[in-house]
Amino acid sequence: MIHHEHVDLKRVSAPLLYPSTAMTSMATAGSVVVQYAGLSARLALPVVVISYIMAGLGLLTALLVQAVFVARLVEHSVPEPPKKPTIFLMIAPLATAGCASTVCETALTVQTPCRASATPSGRRANSSRQPLAGLRPRLASRRSPSASSRRSCCSGCRSSGC
Image 1 (cartoon, rainbow, N blue to C red):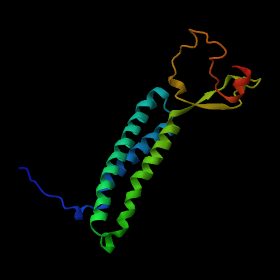
Image 2: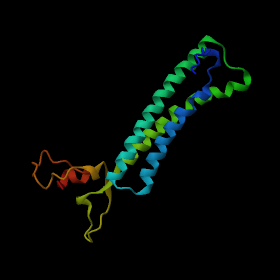
Image 3: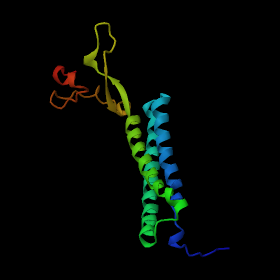
């Protein structure tokens, strides 16, 4: 049986943002798992992509619900005093989406050693961070780029040409 109900704008409240906050929080959690679980770049990429999708969907639904809630605030007055603190719930999806995008970017960055920074004992003195370095195609061994088109992996390499 189908019920057609007219939703009154006065009954719209900020807790409708809970599902979008959950989606953006899942995006943050997925990126944190990738960052600290020690996954390879091949295994981490799908998790980060899904995290970006979840953050985008959560942000989109949050903006739609917030538009309806702001229309409610414009059309009607502020909610009754016991419900006034729920207005601050409008911040939650935006904050977690911002955190998710920052953590997703950090999860995409993997440690790659710089060839120019090797110490005489063969150990790496420091490493530079490059996004998705583990997913780069292995075409460097097949072709020899000219010195002008060669990419550098750190500021030290620009001068030494590693």
